[in-house]
Image 1 (cartoon, one colour):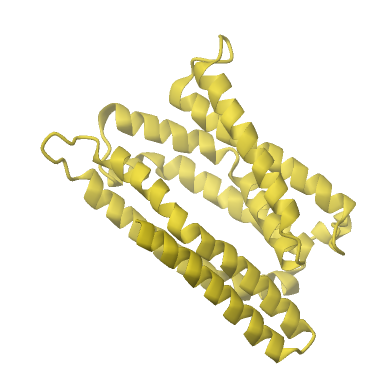
Image 2 (tube, one colour; image 1 turned 90 degrees about the vertical axis):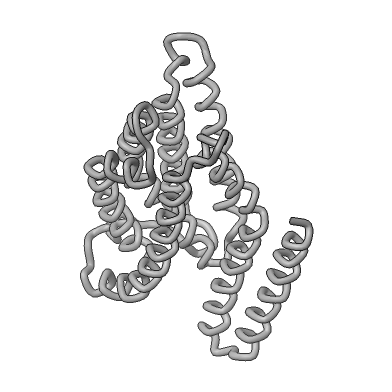
Length: 249
């Protein structure tokens, strides 16, 4: 399952890279960008496309570790990815020449560098093996039966996530085409507000990971009471955290 998941991740990432490269101007124009904003957005997305296969592999590797009950290692890798991203942004944008001074392109290349670093770190970790999870290279040979099983589980989640992002794009289009009196940077303001809003719902995603992992493990040993107890506890914790943040907002 691990091997075939990584193969599918790289294939899906390659498809996403091609779509990002081809549709970057259309995506940027759809949300109302024009002029230099459209040029910067198109450039950013096209540079980002180069690292899409590696980023997909990184995210799938993290999911496999979480499924095995290890959430600490993905946390450590993603923490390192963020550190590399911040350092890369500073170097490529504000650093001395020839490394710095690249503006939006520098931000995109820093993201590519961070994702690439994370994917390599994940691959090395999987090859060494942790928590009973180890990647053997011969498992990367495509096995269509296993891929079909993975797609049967993954495609409904893809549809769910796609619906979420389509709605986000619709909101961006509304915001991007709205220029209030004295407020021409509506998209920038919206982006900052969404980052702040993330404080409220990110704990929900965290507890959903815990619920999915624990439910899968309890189902694996036939402990249905454990499934109910674990998912209910995750729900209570999530509700308490998100409700408290909502009250603070």
